[in-house]
Length: 394
Ligand SMILES: Cc1ncc(COP(=O)(O)O)c(C=O)c1O
Image (cartoon, rainbow, N blue to C red; front, side, top):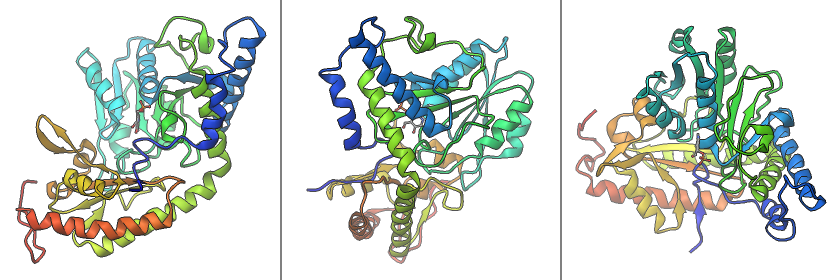
């Protein structure tokens, strides 16, 4: 059975060009880039090229790029660095819909004396800018707002938010893990101080990330040790993955407009056909500016996990918006923050496409989904055959 992969916000296929660029660093070119000899030096030289490729995608300077192990490390480093260098300022501002990499860290920090403000979103997933403005105080050390949401694809006005923070002398970090390579990013004339990306979301391997650190931004490293990354992140470089990420960024820079136009067309058709064929379904965040590849669709009165299982029988890969927490299915914090009704939030599926998806795969998915939903609704205690939904929860 062929796999139809529509879970690219979870992880992406390594591009063949990326793999090819990486392979020599597992065999012939195994030198340590810190070594004094020419053999290691040539590897250092290639890391320099990769740093330029990453910087180019972000509109940054190569010196502003720090290679890390993943998006989570970049997020953690940015927030902890701002607190460590913030002259005792103890307030963090984030949104209610951040990824666990930021949300769980801030929860952890709040138990250690830091004050955390979570900015709410509206029913379309848009940030409440008035609440954001009001949240910025003289004690605020850092704002961390995601550029685009991993579950809904909703894009936040991060540049505007960064300008507001800058005016008050507050550091601004954005988690751009889902936006890098999908929408243009230009940090040249930006107020953003720090930005995180992750290789495996843009067709590079897992286990490589980047923290962009604007020149002149106060900084304390998270991993202290060797002098790698100019003393800003200790640890021998993950050379092959750095080379792969450089290549992935080069490909994204060259093909972003063309590919994302194609991906958006596929995504829009997927949504249109599903909504037309399945009653009581809706797109979460559909009224907002969104990533071109992401679609979060709710099917009333069915369980997302059950939809995933039945889709899996046809080789279709996607994600559900509910997660099993202590034995019960809980809708995601993102959908809850958006106030998506309980019976809708439970049956939400995230489809996330990439350049490798084809028209024919959309045809297959839109053919398979309606009977799956119909079958599940026939068992659902909340679904009435004539299409009326029984009241249930909030
Ligand atoms: C928005 C966002 N931030 C951070 C991460 C974490 O990235 P990594 O898996 O590289 O640690 C993810 C991964 O899903 C993400 O979607």
